[in-house]
Length: 475
Ligand code: UDP
Image (cartoon, rainbow, N blue to C red; front, side):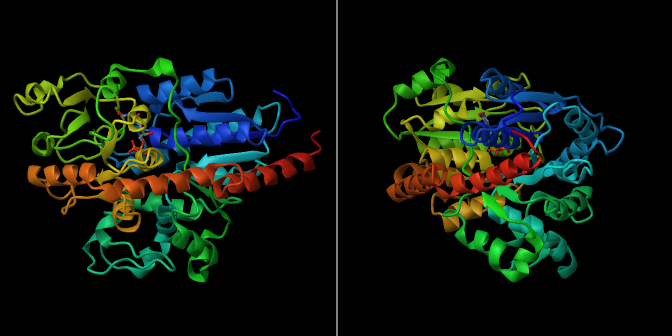
């Protein structure tokens, strides 16, 4: 490693929705800002897809990838601990090896960026460098996270039982049913971890968020200028998005893409629920019927049903052996074989979404998937399941106008086949949704271009770290 180059270290937390934007952020620091970058990821958590992303990032030779040894957290949490608790505890237990690895580095880093689940790394006392938090989601999610310790004092009872929306100074109100998963049950340990996170992420020189100025102007303004909100942010906010995985090389072509080549433009709806989304058997059957009734072409990434756990595959993505015919309605695969393709567990999503034959995306609204849809100019059926996806779905339908959504919350009630049919037809047939999706796509592309607002935000972070690097006497 050249000691003349500034060195940045990034700490990713488990989950592809975290790893991918961290890798993209890292590549930008290398290619646009001249950094040498080391990315730390947690080996134990890696699903096959995460391992593949790490392998391809390492083989590009742009980044140095370090896989930290797994921490055994089984004695620290209950067997049924919620996702946020698991990830925060896993990150906490990983800090000693992260700390040791950085202390042993020959070229000390001048910049550290940690995914927000790893916020406790910001407080490692001997780390003398510029330190930033990375929130791979929206400014709206960030505002809620920063404000939750205040809501905790202001609001009595469960948030979801309130009749009135939650008021966040200067921001759009948050409907009780849209709160993030850790706020669903205040006695759950993940709520306490989430509140600690709301305070912990500000113990940095700034917060980077995977959004952009034109996407969320009101919330970003509130985070910076609204006294009652900015006092919680405390530090500068840098929108650096939309950061997503780019389309892979030609050799990544699969039979699915060959099939898409044969379909008319904008005629296929892609159906997928991220790396963790699962449905009950009843919901899975309704979805199959709804797709069939819509008579649209489709690619559907399916997972075996799991009752009452919408994020049931989060830690096991890409694993599991049942054939779809074992759990989809009888005859579905045969009846739809001329219009649709069913893919078990996993598909090359970015390549599919950016194919000209794809005209709609029925999605769980994970922020990674949402950005991939936006950057392909593809309108969505918003079907939120877990994490902050209900907030995202509301933004997509009510603010951005690029999605339709079911009348019931899919995690509360089964969405029936007739409604699914209606939504699928709407997203495929209504031109205004597609036109609007293309406009949002262009605004995202503009933000990232050299001289665009997100490019400039990252430049400011990079410049501060480069000045720090020089102040240490580096050449
Ligand atoms: N993904 C994929 N193929 C699949 C399912 C998911 O490539 O079959 C990728 C998707 O492109 C996205 C990531 O996995 O980059 C999921 O991140 P997101 O934030 O959407 O949701 P999460 O899985 O974290 O809930």
